[in-house]
Length: 241
Length: 305
Image (cartoon, rainbow over all chains, first blue to last red; front, side, top):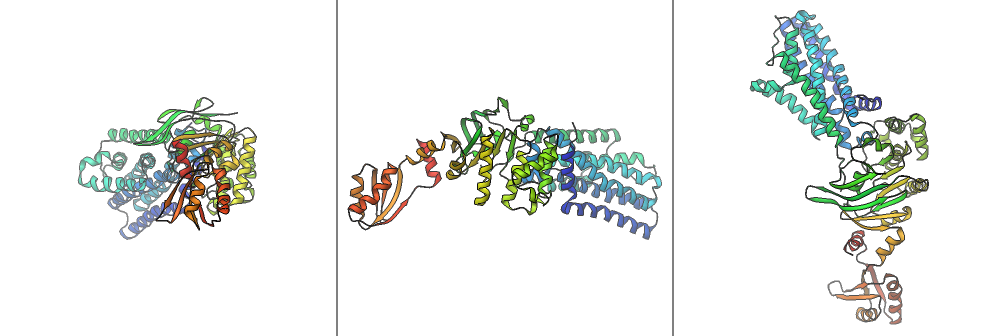
């Protein structure tokens, strides 16, 4: 079994309740505001569309939402010990992980894909398939980020910080300075898909070839999910002794 | 009827041995796991509830290994010590979720029945975040009872409860024990364990120190040498009278404290002889205080036996 409805419901409530929902809504709203502003002041401009969808949406919005959804789907429960109520049930622990992954992916998609598509259409009406390209890239990136950050949530108490460091420092900063770092970057992998989809005139380029990128995306997602399951199977609940 | 067997089990964390070669059997009825803080009670309960692998030895439930064996949870109800419990849900939603996770045929009525059992039906629609500590404890209980497990494991369940809640929980656990369920709870308070448990397992510094019914444990604890600090109107005369009696094995004159340090071997006799001797010799007792009544010293005596 890959899915348990009760686990999914508890995870949705945790992710969409409290302050998280505000952050989850604020980020895409910001993207839409910027898209409207750029369109209003600069008119239709493919270059601006590529820069905003690539630099802001795919490079910032998608990983940030991924960190919130991926780590948020499991880390708080491990942190406060409430995961015990899921684990002390006749329920395969891999089912718990895959269910939480589905929820994290669902939340990521809802808060990235739809706003990115709308922003792209606002910016240039999907000329040169730029909006479509980044939307598809956001879909695959959301899946991989969710799996990797979910794993991070089972590995470390500082999952959010580590996730942000990966997304903001490794992918953004190192990616710009050290070309080799881009090979291990979910952003670059998804960008290579966007490069293929968009028309040749669009200025989208990735450092990773498409077949490599696809393989790495699948490997990261599957391996991350498998290892998160392993972690949960041998999770020790810290005692006071 | 379900029995938990712990066989030659040790658990260490790096260089620290938390549980040291323990063998015990938890049978139906109410068993108290007694020991000072840090003795390894939680480590034992974590192993019994499948959240910790034994470093050596085995922990089984009716001969089924508990570690990494999710199906055994159909028979285990766990009341953890930690407070984390989905505060954003209402108590009713929380217990219902637990019933669903157990795959019960009718989770709704099972949840209602469990909430009734712990007398929390009236607050089922309130969010857990608004509950008092005692209410949280009761909802935890309901979540552990919802699938009517044959084994109930409770880690320090009475911590932070007021006397009324404590009595209510004791009644409930006693009833479950009488129904033939295997109930195990940990505590560092002898009186608590004595009131409730028909069988007591004492654990000290990771070792299994004693096992038996409460009378046996109580006797073990009262038969040990007791130390008292005594001040009187004439310490030396009192010392002479005391050492002449067989209830006393040693006396030291503590000049710094200006008092007697008395070691009594026969607790019952000493408590009746001390005032009698003082009266016979016309000595006024000013201070009589036990100097080693802390539970730790009682336990360390049990271990060093």
